[in-house]
Length: 276
Ligand SMILES: [Zn+2]
Ligand SMILES: [Zn+2]
Image (cartoon, rainbow, N blue to C red; front, top):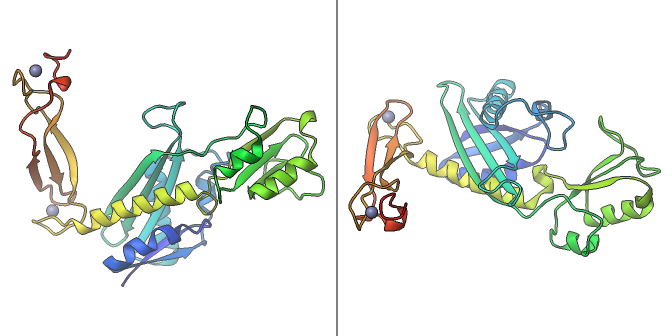
């Protein structure tokens, strides 16, 4: 087995390790480094690195601090996607890094997510909204806080990792009407089931990349990285933006492999001439 270090306080190995084990990689967790210094979801620490740089930094740190050849970095982000502001979107990125070769493989998964901030007003009672997200934990921010609750962290009056029950309990204790209260999903992996599923999907993508070897140099990640557009329109035969082939590329030796698509032509809907 190849040992792969994953630095996390958020139990992420649970959704990654089972996928990598059959390929001979044993993912182990370490909390030797506080990844929160690279940014947090709840805003105490602003994120300055791009997700790819953050994932690579975490993977490199994992190798360095645990003295392991393989390191894994995980970075999630919310927002963006095809319809920002309309559809909530979750991106999960994994970076597998090998210290001895300097090779980095990025895997990712993205898709819509139903979790979002909750509002106390509106027609649907808060209890009912919480029922839609079983096992999701929450963050409660309030101006004055809850009496008798110890506040942790930089921001005052913030409670993290609250179950639906605990959240309702806290809401009862604070006089909501006299202060501003916000309820956000706790997006840390162990508290967010929808994110857990997306991390698992990214792990599946990593498995796919580790399973495709370059025919020339045997390096991993010989997957499709480029699209060649120009599939001819079935009506007028002019080239369209639709893919006519996909190209697998090796990051190590540059070997390229074109794979033509099965379709003979593109639907005229995609044609600039027939359907401008
Ligand atoms: Zn190669
Ligand atoms: Zn056409």
